[in-house]
Image (tube, rainbow, N blue to C red):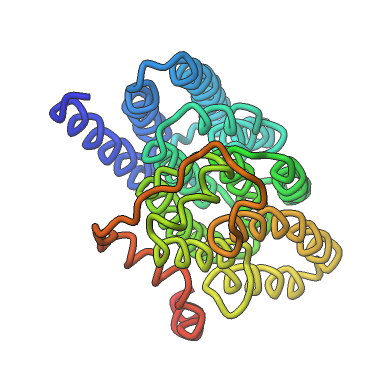
Length: 346
């Protein structure tokens, strides 16, 4: 892709995200979401592979439908209340339509079908953007309207997302699809606590973005797209693969790594709100995700290929990993001792 075109699309992504997260009018938020959608589509389809074109079309159709629903929701609310302010979402039908629209944009169950397919068709760097940056504007809208949303509906969708994200990731061999189902599962954790503590949802999202960014950038460096190539990539960058294993275990939420912090805080908050049953269910469902994170960690570092493989061993790379990967990986594994400071910020 032409570097100027890539720069234009990247700046458009930043512009769209900034417009949405800083707006308090529905039309401005909708405009930002549309700029984001139109800017990411060329980045998805830049390889011109049929799977990439298919992913771009699926992404466009789903996002267009979600944006239409969001606009419809805001218009119904304006019709009944005379308010275009995002925080004044008082009409129940508008609230329901908005929850549906944002669930489609994020990939929450039952509107998750597009997400694994789109991630599988995208390059690793674009897949990282789809999993992190592109989820920021919809989550911001959810935070602004959290007081108007239906708690039962959100809790049901959250538990279903955690269950399906864990269950569907078990039999995948493509790493991008595994990370897509991981994203769906994490969105469940964020949604369940949204109404009770929006700042905790945002903190969870930031930590998730840090860990996912580190994983995608590492995979992009080692050029690992499926489990069979991941098994042989340890010869290329042994230290980087060891760091990848730690980041994957952090994403699984194992102590004493960073990923344990949001899950601990969410379960604590749900217990305070007397939601012990949902907290227990979502904690048990995270064991499903733990299985495929452990499998990824096992393939990345601990195991040699158990059978003869058609893939050649890669040469050891002397080129050092980027500073960004080092910073993100360090944050993904070492932030738990700073939890008192993070709690003070929340």
